[in-house]
Amino acid sequence: MDKFGKVSFIGFGLINSSLAHIFKLKKLANKTSAFSRRIETRDKIRSLNIVDIVNDDIEDSVKDSDLIVLGVPVGAMESVIKKILPYLKKGVIITDVGSIKKKLVDTLVPLLPKDVYFIPGHPIAGTEKSGPESGFPELFNGRWCILTPYSDTSQKARDKIKFMWEQAGMKVAIMDAEYHDRVLAITSHIPHLVAFSIVGTVTELEDQLKTEVIKYSAGGFRDFTRIAASDPVMWRDVFLNNSDAVLEMLGRFIEDLTALQKSIRWQDGESLEKLFIKTREIRKGIISEEQD
Ligand code: NAP
Image 1: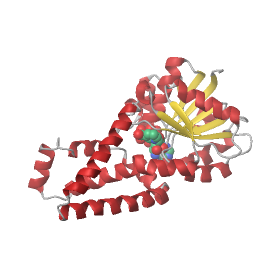
Image 2: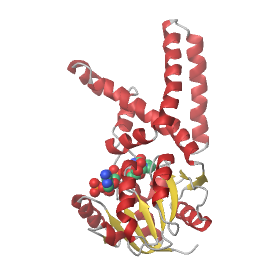
Image 3: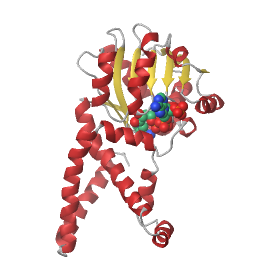
Image 4: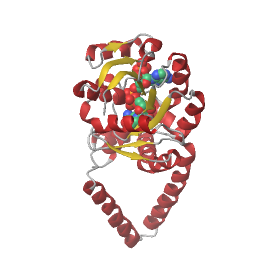
């Protein structure tokens, strides 16, 4: 596959900076440019030396670009698209890395002219860290990237984005946007919500108990704190924009939690053990798929 012409990274945090590392390492583009809204972030990007140019204006970054990768929080995608719309080159491919897909497709597609090709994407890889300095090229290695093209998406543009993520070491799957959001609600969004909730409960405890929890956190709580340290804006936007799927899965989760509560109250060890045996199997499955 041919390499890319000019690539513009709009928003430059963990995900786009990691991808920019790949572009640099593999020389995937003739020219790379980045834009981020705050001057402090742009200064950080300049000091990292991962892209050819860091633009102070979004217009300068996107004009003449053959590929634009949107790496901003989901709630900011629409306003970014509206800003760049007047400067888009005919035939440009736009992709995004947002964690939810249906609402983005529904909102962004009607805004775009016919000669602009939009390929919605979600690399399922991340850490709890944010910002351009937290990116690293191995982030995507061996993980899945889900593309959710819609009915009139160009096959050529889709292949190009598939190629890009494969260069980053990802396995690429094609999925319907709504289905993607339901899958991610249970694999990612609910687990994050549980972590935010448990760690939130600790913030309400009286001081003495809180100190003990932090001191003895290795008993499980510590793992929740890592997840609950994820970017607040990104996660706010995920829950606001995937509310239907999250509320549906949350309903199921609460029912199952209530069943566990009952088993404990009734001293029903058999039910508890049966469930814990089943959950162990899920972990084994993840390990055998090399997704641990
Ligand atoms: P990040 O490290 O927090 O960086 C966010 C970037 O977006 C920064 O360049 C920031 O600019 C910019 N930004 C924030 N709010 C904005 C706004 N209102 N308008 C315009 N720009 C704004 O984010 P990230 O973790 O790379 O996530 C980026 C996207 O990837 C999100 O849509 C997220 O859902 C998705 N994603 C994240 C993960 C993950 O684990 N982190 C995994 C997969 C997908 P300034 O710094 O200049 O303010």
